[in-house]
Length: 287
Image (cartoon, rainbow, N blue to C red; front, side, top):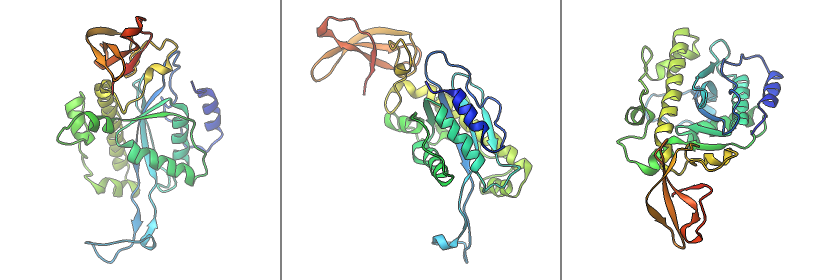
């Protein structure tokens, strides 16, 4: 487990962007600190002589993109927290990135939608740009990749799969549709920033629900049983309500007892072969 107090002291020495309420996870006696996270970025600003079929080079760019807001939930707490740059220069994201760095440095497991392709790489890029070191090790589950591996809905976008898999769902933009929201935020429109906060929060809530719904399906998830002192738990969700079910799992060399987690409905196999005549002391995900 990572030392939250050490991270708290380190962040206190940084600049003065307020740390949002619920930023720090409550104490976890046993098990992982799982962070669900989503960021929003600012658009690049540039010069162009036309509106259609334009190919821009770096010389056309006046301002490169940065991070303007984030929202997170510690899964065991269930309380969203949010921060943005509404009363600051939206292209000066150093303080915001310092907070994101601390979150990654604190969590054991990170959950995102499309985060392996976008969110995490963008955060790492901004950390490097601001001279921050690499966060301490964490494991990452991209719920969109998990969905793509095992299912084929009409779309893997969060707006769609949250309706199918979750109880709430991601709504479209309200008063400021599309790029208008980002344009109005950059111009300091407080109503636009409030809508950005709503948009960011609902993304995180929807991501958490999608993750809990599909994590029992397996890879490319994270083996959560390793974070507990008693590792005889479901590797998908960390639950202890695991039951033996009919049938065995036959591998190339050995066969194993088959189990189901009654929490996440994941299918598991025992860690001892049937031929060994030994009781299973843990469970293994089935690829």
